[in-house]
Length: 402
Image (cartoon, rainbow, N blue to C red; front, top):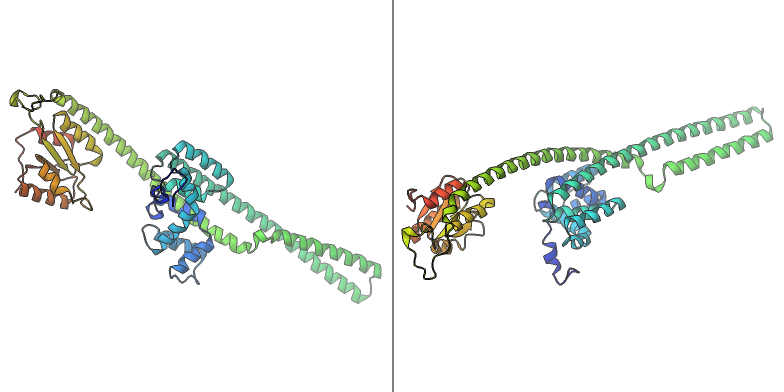
């Protein structure tokens, strides 16, 4: 099966979107609340073996929210339903820029079609942080607007019910008055006719008011309002959680920016220090004049680094290559990535292994392989750029292959 996006298979397009358990936690409640009706909550729980007879609507939602943190039978059913509802939007925005997505989101938001479009945007893996932040804020404000609407409807219902009660009391009094006068024989036939006409008008007015108070839209109004109030309470709690997470992200962002500034300064210092190594390549003959060559330290040597800070990989690479060496890198995470470790160790001339940013298994494996293939191994206490530079250019740092 192929999509309209050229000849790309549908599965390839949809693979660029996260499942519900992979989505940021502060988006899960708004998406599920917008896309799953109370009846759909109940249906999913019944299919997963839950006894819902004694559960209230807000408890359906609580159970489902507790399950979508990871992959299980409940979250899979929720995920399948949501993705089926949002599939068209997911395919539509797969190749869109954030600006194009923003235009489409505004149009769908104004039309009230929030759920599928919101899921498509927040589950797309390459959606920008700014757009996600705007979506979160707009959904937050939409929740406040809905809360105001609910209270307005409730006030109108209470006012209409009060008016209806007054009219019913008047009808009872008039009916009793007619009966009393008829029994006492103090009322004429014409008066009775007029009172009956007035009585009928009151009945008609009551019928009209009852139709307004309980139209199809407001059937079981009390139950609906109770359910909405519970959902509102859950929504407020979710918003408080989102605010806390937002503050945490802001702190993390500030910390990352500060760290990046320090890295930039350190990198500039190292680049200035490494400028003497920026010499042209050796002659085509491959004969290196040893000590007279400015790239003698690393010329044609392969340096294999295991571990360290992944986002600094390009800086590590720059240090090695500016000195004429070749750089190879492994992030130190051994799950599904240890198959070619042996070949990469055999191919290199030196192995660097920082212990502060590495897995225990990676350190043990590298040490074992360096011993097996007699490769120099330098264990670093830090993954900083200065530590890597010192390890590469300082021959006094001991190698450890014991």
